[in-house]
Image 1 (cartoon, rainbow, N blue to C red):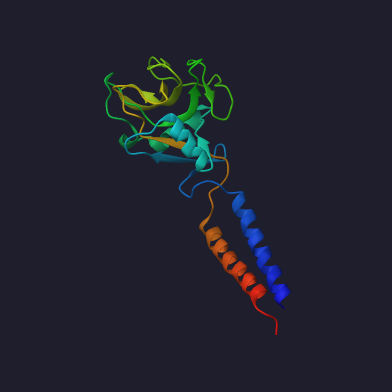
Image 2: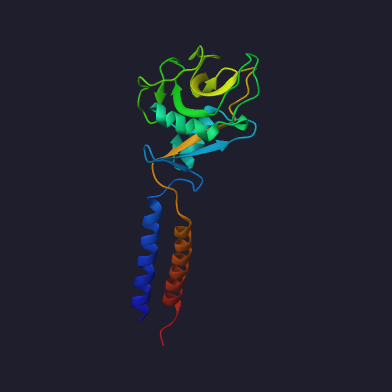
Length: 206
């Protein structure tokens, strides 16, 4: 009897753990039916550097969003098309939106790549006078349309520039679905079952 209970408990733990391993996105992420990926807009009070945003996206189980065509870009932009995601007006009389997963190195500031490793292709909806490698050094790409909000892109120094506020957020892209709430409940039940196994093992036989 003990052996049968122990086997069922271990199988429950294994099944739940396997199901969770395949689902990494946050429950707040939104599905883009066009490509099957999930996206999550993250607002950061006080702003954030491109490097910190990229690291945070990876820590969350995804990567900074990499819109590769017009429909993907429109979907991502719709998530951040609000005043809270754009900076105050800069010394150049413009505003800057959230970080995307596109960047360049200090050695080649005008040669942009996606964080996934792919080079920037023919689709690159740059905003007015962009890219301009303002501030020099390694560049990160944000949403930028001058003094207004728009789905076009601009580049800025990854660590920020004098006279400009750091972008107030970033967008994470995930390739897998978010963990459904029932799975969390199953995980808790599996933990209880595993505890029962340990207790059964520790109990002296009659």
